[in-house]
Length: 156
Image (cartoon, rainbow, N blue to C red; front, side):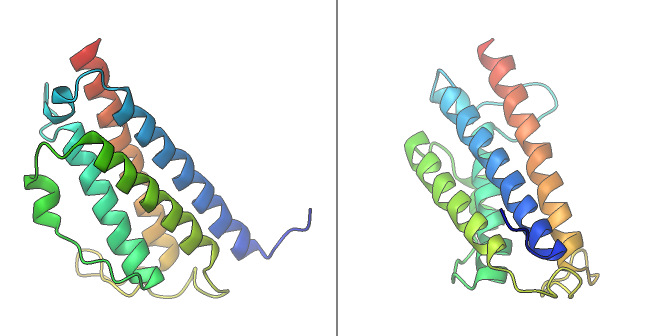
């Protein structure tokens, strides 16, 4: 197997990590025994698993899909946190489509992008693509842990 440039290898690694964690998020949401429990919280976690799934899908479609891949996705961040009782099958289908888009978009990034300034500011500061993708990975991981906790705590 031939290796690409170091930059392409980094994009490929990020694509694989996001693919892995988005598959795990799919597994977690699908593993809830009760559709109702997808929309419940417990303890100090204020957002239910369904909300976290909608939020992550919206965030990735916005920042990776629209910003990096020009998909035309229009984010409804308020809806990510306000919508309830979205059928689990709908969320899982949207999550799978998001995962495929993320992998495709990251693997298509051209040389020189890692150190370029990301087109959107983060907390009013310029950041590089490398910084922003690191943030996206940790953001997903943080919320994935919350979803796992909620599922185990609510359903044993």
